[in-house]
Length: 87
Image (cartoon, rainbow, N blue to C red; front, side, top):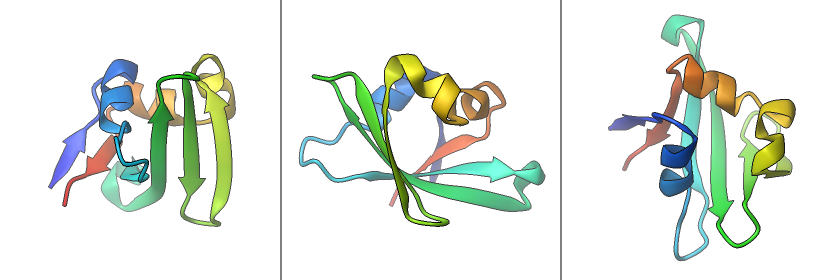
């Protein structure tokens, strides 16, 4: 099952995990023909996201104020193509 991320506040909730495990997300590309998989975790205390980009296993730690500058997550939310993978 997939859950559409509605806005940044929704992403914070979906990417928060009490046990500290990353949460699986993906960005749908080219109208669903491809996807960019990501593992994301939000830390409320420092207001930052930890992001692992599955394609190359690169890691980013991004403060919420820099999210639109350093990632495509805000653009993906605005275009309704960021989803959480629900197992």
